[in-house]
View 1: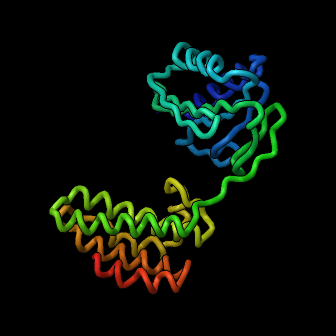
View 2: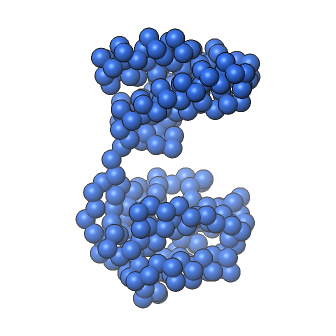
View 3: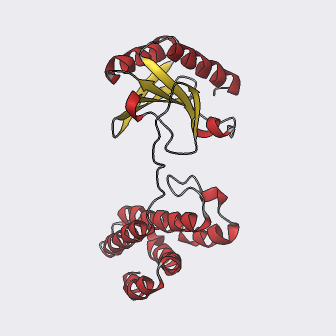
Length: 241
């Protein structure tokens, strides 16, 4: 396990490496550090603006992570023209280094604190669309029903979990907390989350009961978004479960 001190030393070293690299024209703290909200488990999140081709800078920083900082593996997440290279270190620390084309570098969420360089004005990333979450929920409910009827318990567990995920995301939107990747779930009131405990499977054979529970909670969330749509979907959802 890493310590906060080790995390800070690595982050400082990476920022210094970026300042010393003439190809890197900007850097920012992202993630919890940008909001002074780190705890002992927080990872490193940095964004770098790159002039010219990303790949040579990516290659050099990647080699440094393995050579000097104990990286054991990494993966890439690509969004538009930005590459998020996520490193796993030997001490279990995660380091997320985002390499942005210079023209795209700028805040798209509040979790962005400029360290150096000139950011571009960027539109803020919108929260998930409630209608889209509803559509994904009923779609997965269809597959939950067919999985149960086919005796595919593990598939049913997966599909019920997705229905729960979308219903909880709707609750997050309603309460104004982050609605992606479970980030806002622990900020929801207990009065919202407690009923969802009934949607957790106690075993594979428990899928039918859990499906009925999550269906009712989903219907309640749909009613808060669009009562007319809920009136059309509720009878079908209850028939499924």
